[in-house]
Image (tube, rainbow, N blue to C red; front, side, top):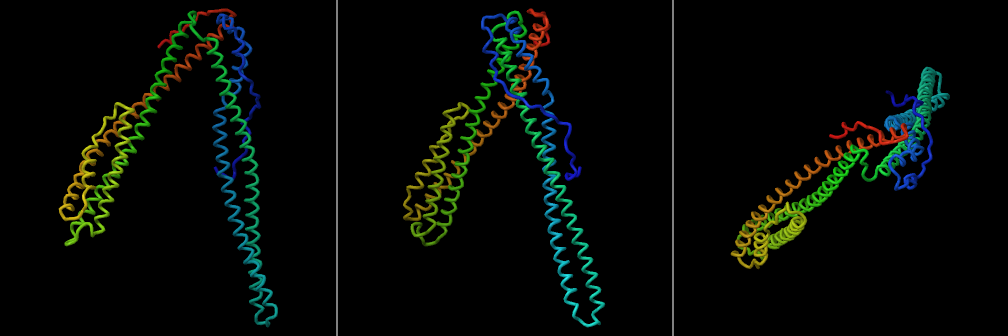
Length: 402
């Protein structure tokens, strides 16, 4: 569909509403039997059901309206661009027309041999004028389309807002209905064992979902700690490798001691950086192992000792240079081993998060399904009591017990 030719919507109507507080539950007699509570809630229950029924398709209508508003927005943007481009073309055409008229005026005082050229220039004026008027009509057309689209867009946004209010009203009413059902059926209902059965199952599923969600939150914190530790240990390895590289260049300088070479300072600085990042990683790993038994503490003692030994050299002789070089290379190897183990911890944490997320998805689906079944069964009970005026009715709840 051409975005500039979008027709107005006429099939989406909305109804204003005024929200009322849910105070009915507070007026139920706590010691009254279930049948009495249901009968005393007849008017309130009927009003809630009617409100939901009147807005049954509001979500689908809102989705359609959102798509329609987006389509109008794209059409309006296109119309604005087309009008701007047409305005530029009209401006250029007007300039050319003006130039053509000026050339005709300049040719009036010339001799007769220029008459043929003058006629040619006058024809050019008419041609440029025609182009200008055509471009000007295009500007007006795009402008009028833009005005029309702006009006449609404003009306569509207004209707979208009304539908959003209607949807919110439906959501609020649904919550009020669920609160009413909870108040009516709170506690054991031995006359309706199938309702008690599903209610207990819903409670148990909620409990499992809460526990799993808390576990996932803890695992997420653990993953962040391990990621931070891995980043630090990677930086430590890089700095240690840099120290080795500076040490190699330093020893390649024939006849110079490290203390006289800029490489001596650079390799010490690189090893200091490696030690700093290693300390950061160690803190993160220790924190992770303290909050989760799934993370075993890692041994940072050996690489720390090698780094300390490397930094203790005074680099006053070539022997110290060689010793530093050996310590730095060993540091790279030891820290690399820790990095490998830390990577394994990260992968394991990621797998646990994936498994927990899957359990949460499945449990949430079960909770949604059983909660709906519980509400449907309670609604069935209420409807039967309101029709018969007494209870308990004989219900077939076998399909709910699964």
